[in-house]
Image: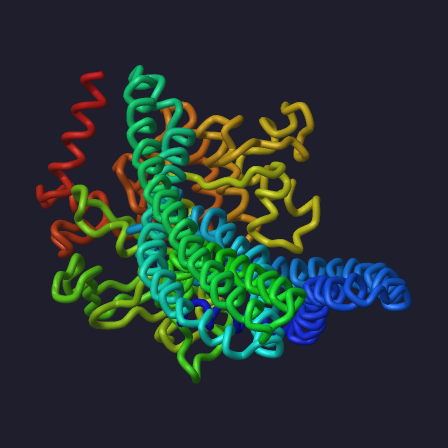
Length: 577
């Protein structure tokens, strides 16, 4: 129950409301405990002694008690629900903040649907544990404790006999609780897998349809849905077994009460009214035990979700600033790699002893076969990862000695796969600098060769572009990404195969925009099409994480090495077409 204790800590900011809610719950439960006592007095005094004054008092008492019970019931429901909803919002926000701070490596290992499931399905399961279960747990516990007190007050011997069976109920709940938690964990995993499958097939619907794989995806979903069904039915089976087991043990308690209590009434040791009241309290005892067992099962299933949530919250976050990290001052853009080596896994380097210097305003291009380490370099400059050996400096300042925020604010990235958000064109471009004016946004769009196509859209800059910019072409999306980078006005620019996914016409338009963007900035270009980097100040040829060649286009063509080989292959292929 450590996770539940940890979850309860989220309630701490709302302890005053919780305290008031508990008072309401206890008072509401006390009204239920008043009913058996009324029955006792009705039998032993009103009916036996024909006491009309007491009958009138009982009638008035019932009305008053249940009037206040209604007020307390409203108070408990509202207050506990308020606390639970606030806690859920806090947990959801904490998860989202955590996701924003996690390393890129985390996202490379986890499916998007699984990550989404943490905030949706798992948090929803916690809500069930906190709202319904917490109210029921405190309510039934209050009735349970109150019933026990009243039972001992009426007849302590009969109470002791009754409680002999209670440890058996506790043991049954413990056994079933462990199994229900394990079952709940499997349900959450299966639900996350369904979410992941949905995310994949919906976002990749064009691929599914182009390969006519609708039936294949339906079969995959049906199989996953069936696994989810089986996991849920296993949980239902356990829950269904728990309740009758507890009910049977409770029935044994009632049987003991009837026999032993009846024996005492026959011998005059207990009044008939007291026995009926005792039996009513015993039923009140049995019902809370049964309901608490159900709540216990629900909580254990929810704790599987809590475990997943806390696993995320305990995951190592993104690279952190040094305690003495300083703000990176406005830079000129000199970038130096000083014997840099890097590996995603310990002992397995993908970059080996890379050394080079990019002076302010220079264009440095990285080329080489797939897996050579080009994109890794792009990840190291903004400190998405830290170098394993060596150092990267900007204006002779080690990038590990400055705050990550101040570093990344002066670096612009234009990736191969442009990520746009589902808002308007204006909102997406403004993402480069949130305080930018409309005029600055338009100027950035013009510089990116995007203004004309934007103005031809129905709502211009206020046009909604759909999820991931689905209503735009690849070239249009890329020009928006360039406009966003222009608006940010970074001193260092990283272009990660920014034109490789475009057709020839779009590539020319985008390349023209990129050429404008690179003017006056230190630019690192990861190139697939070598024709786009022939004018680079320095071309670095990588293979298996090592620098094979370095120089200008003319110099490398003259040496007849790997670069010349790659260029001739592309040129001959282009000529053949």
